[in-house]
Length: 108
Image (cartoon, rainbow, N blue to C red; front, side, top):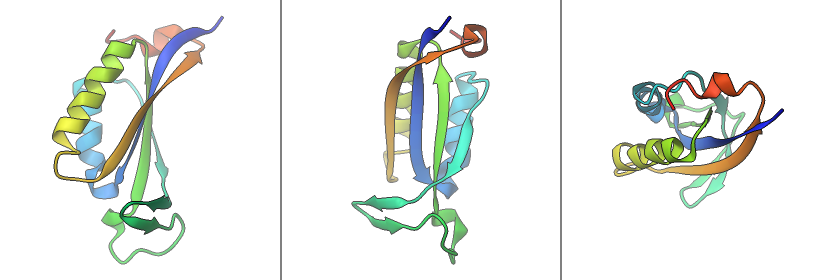
């Protein structure tokens, strides 16, 4: 059986990753994944597999799943307030269906 949940997708420069991860831990998120990022946006092109002189300015995508939408929105609002106020980034939420509901409701 599948259960509804909300996935949080966050794209930021690598130097912001520790700050985002701390917010996730503060909200008792039990797990997340980090992927190397690349693409084109309003601030230019980020090549995913090119050598970077300053590694901290490469981008990463951080994803996690939480059981309840209001919890995901609270996390998103804190990231907007604490990370995006002075830095670039993108965040969106997706409705997903999960197996093993107990893995995603630890702090719900």
